[in-house]
Length: 197
Image 1 (cartoon, one colour):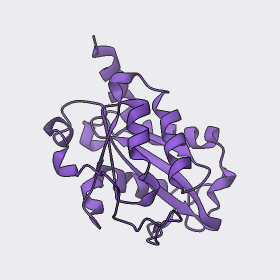
Image 2: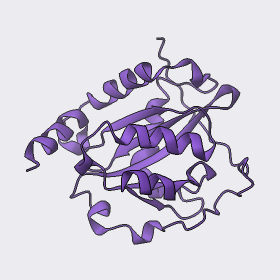
Image 3: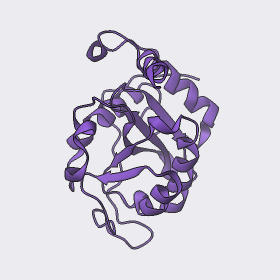
Image 4: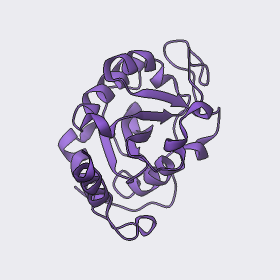
């Protein structure tokens, strides 16, 4: 796999959804302002931020970052429609212990219109950022910039298998982070799991 660096950040489409639901109008959305304090101060693991990054030919990858450890997961999605995204995220949640999934914060993209079905299936609450406020998912936005090394603008993302995505995520998770005292996200997450009763 050839990895290139790029200076520009990948932009996501701001078009209305194919389901006729304009961006920003999510039915029964729970505001980020109702997210528990433990998610805000990163004291408790299990609170995630998520987004889609887009590539050529209307291709997408879901990106998930755990706020406490900065651990990253990349998820192959079949499309940007709400059903495809919900199904892919539900599958990915089941790959980690239940205690590592407490909440997910997303922007108001129509791809998360099925958030109630996701919560019903996983017991993971979904909180939504204010419209046009990507800084409210700052950890995820920063990670998406790091991912530009592996997925340059114009890349057709459907060419990557879930195994490829896992490899890229592993590389990020094995990078020491200054914000973690130069511990890796993988190391931080493993320590969290080990200390869980």
